[in-house]
Structures are given as structure tokens and as C-alpha cells.
View 1 (cartoon, one colour):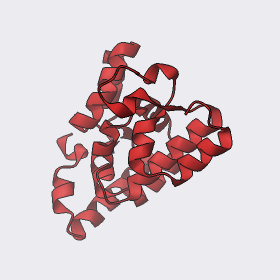
View 2 (cartoon, rainbow, N blue to C red):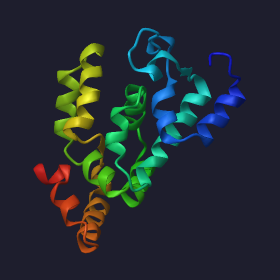
View 3 (cartoon, helix red, strand yellow):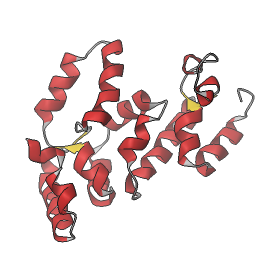
View 4 (cartoon, rainbow, N blue to C red):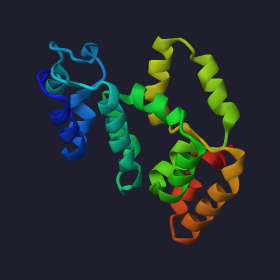
Length: 179
């Protein structure tokens, strides 16, 4: 798979299924483990430059679909790269996610609790711990995307809309109701 051209990799990013995206694309050769008991971990297509950006953008399209994005991300071999990208979202992207993300993503990955996210980042500043924290974020459903104060009203409007549309369970389990 190391012999694929940039164009072939780009085509795969745009056309393949989510399982293939999560399991066969990697960001370095160190992510390929020829001795792994999981067959898919023995191979990998290394993403670099523009292809990495395209890959992350394609993964993020899954936030609008009605399936469990958080559970899918647990099997992703590039969670660290994706989260670093997510943490740097501009306000316009966060605004779009508030409007378009499925209930699972909206209520579990967007937080208005800046202190909690800052505490997590400070507590786990070294790279080994950060890797562990990144895995646990999806398991513990910690907020990943910080909603800036300027979008708090829009966030609350979306939460109210979900409640009115019968998504009561998702609203009650919202990350932000814990705060």
C-alpha cells in the first residue's frame, strides 16, 4: 500500500467506507504493526500534507450523519491528529457544527465548560499522557469542541430545538448539563 500515488490516496479518501477510513489510514509508519493480532493494524496507507487535511475533513463529514460518531472514533488509528485539528476549529466551523451535527456529536462533543478542557490539557501536557487522554475523551464523553461565548445562545437554541423535536434523552445526557 506504500506504493499508492497521491491521486490514488485522494480518490480512496473521497470514496471509501468509514471502516476503511478509520482502520487503514495512518499518519506515520510507526502506526503500522506487522506483528499485531489485528490484521488491519499490519497494514496502512500513510497520510501526509494535503491528503491528511482531506482525510480529516472527510472524517468530520460523519458528524452530521445519524450513527454513533464517538463509538466509530474509538477504532480510528488517527484519533490524535483528528483531535488536534478539532481543538483548533475556527468559530465559523463550530457554528456550522452547532447547526448540523447529529445529536450524539452535538450533546457529547461540544462543551461550554472551558475550565474543564483547560484542566485536562494542563494535567496531561506530555505526549504519552495526551495519547491516553485522547482515547479517554471519547470513552468518558468529555467535551472536545469549545463553544465560544459568542455562540452560547445558538448552542442553547439548538439544545431547545432538540428537546422540542423529541430528542429528550440526548438533551438530558448532554455533556453540558453536568456543568
